[in-house]
Length: 389
Image (tube, rainbow, N blue to C red):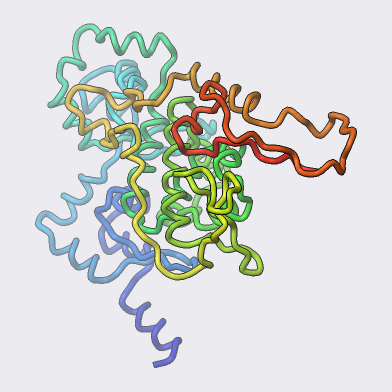
């Protein structure tokens, strides 16, 4: 059978997402929510292209009891005004509860003023009203008032965590999982964690797109990319540690593509040096790019973080800070200590008397207080790099 015949047969068994939405009697936005929740499975082509839905998947959903009302009710989303009416409270109280992290947005859109408008699952709001009726009447609790007075707004962080955890659950390739976590860091922090430019380019190339590709206006895509980046110190540290762990699994599975089949030395994180005595890198190299990818470690194992959405918690709201390894002030202090104490004090602008005096001596060890946070955790190298000539 030729390739063309195989493609035609595969296309006949599937349908475009627009056709699938019509078959399921859903709007395009409702189908996107259903895909995000895992209610509808789509096929994503490896070489790119638009996702498609199998006809067997459509038949399975249409054969369920109560179709299409049950499916449409599960993906029904409401805004602030309709959500407040559903809970029987004022829109102002609904906004305060959402900012405090009592329930998590499922998606958003930009209005005509280019302002982010959050949408919530109606089913989750009903479950919240049954689970926490005391938060809908009377005086707000002390923890809620304290967060609001401090200027907290957990909506973006909760939406981001929910989306990241959903993507990590649906992916098995460790490099794709690392690409999801790389998208939560700004370019400066990503360069600090992934110092290889070829690996950064590979992560950017395989980063999963939304279910239906980069749809919407450029402003909407830019807003989504901005909302995907962590914006609090403890969340940044959590994502950095998770990315380092995923990269370790990805490099063990296969190496990122490099021009000319070049291979990069692997860092020994256990002993800190290779068998040849050179501290920091092993003398053996990783195998070249090859097929196969093992399952990476879930970042939920880092610091015992809880990935459940806000609606699934009994008492603690969704914006409870993820257990961080250090506080924000300690995180900043560790970064300053790592830059000032670990890096070589010789800078490019400093005069060098003897440029050909030979290799620069690298200390075998550094005092514990001079090491950065990730070095003390054993996740980064403990020795400075040799300065560039």
